[in-house]
Length: 127
Image (cartoon, rainbow, N blue to C red; front, side, top):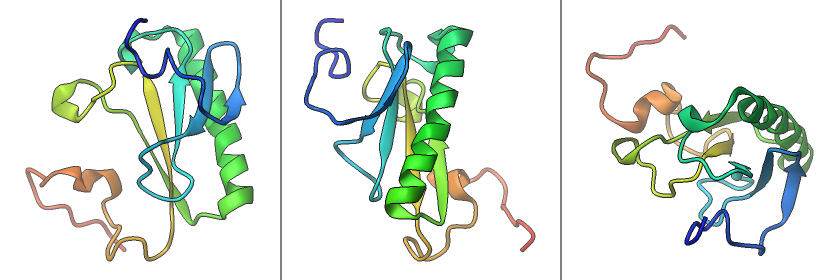
């Protein structure tokens, strides 16, 4: 699609690829090893993809995890998809973030993605 940064760039190191998706490092990483998995077909969001594409993205996620485990040895991962402006999506081409997490990269990681915004009710997980 004309003007789409994911459809019109060749300056990326492909980490994993199949017929429906490819994975490469995020140009604006949250943590060392932050990878994006992007659909090859231009669709705006996760909910616009077909089951075959979602399956292909999931398969690549496991390949990416194995690759990142070997290269960076992270202590955990966040996997996320922003869908729509209200959720923070800025590039309207389906992409999944795979973000390695490291012990001590934040003071208190409890709650993970739940801490993107203030909760409607207090979150008190058991330790």
